Length: 273
Image 1 (cartoon, rainbow, N blue to C red):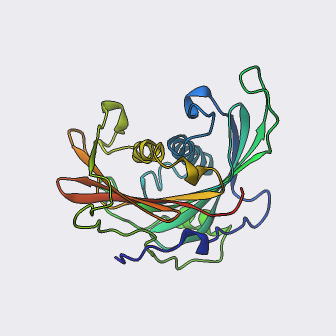
Image 2 (tube, one colour; image 1 turned 90 degrees about the horizontal axis):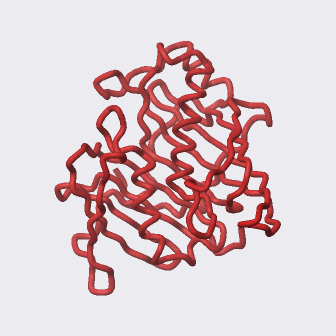
């Protein structure tokens, strides 16, 4: 796996074939989804993506043929921040696949409302996402997507030989460095784990949100978060975070028992959202 960090701005996310492509659903942003500045948090977006994927799988009728999927990577582009209150329209479609995995795009477009706690008018929000999903069997081993499932996913893309290319540095620096902050612990809660006894994808983004408290400038303009998952994290694990800021890019490595289990970057574009 490459340790080169690819500049996220060099990887634009593909457009949908049409406005009607894929699966769509709408929801309201709730107060539990936003930070004190009323911004929709990364962990909330990750939770939206998981719930939408479950609903999509059910609507397509593939809960029996292809019931188990794991996320290998999540990319979140905040083009125009989504804030509370708002109604979010979600559009999900496949942007590339192979026999065992698929890139799933989700566009979140928000119509902002006002209320006494947030009376100001804001531009409509727009967040673009793409997640690399792997089809697995009940033991968690990658397995072939069913013929019907493949046909459903292939209907929105001509990319049928999708290959993995890392967008993060899988190995952390050996030491934090003289100018870097010391490693910190991150407390994992019992509510962070899913029915498979693995750390929920949204919980990783909670660690990213904690770190962003020290880097609010990255959120003031258009920005992208990328997280890649390398190893499962089970209940009882103790997680340590190593972080490094270089220019407009924040890098994080999440480790358990001295092994990196996930790596993340948050990159500011330097352009107004």
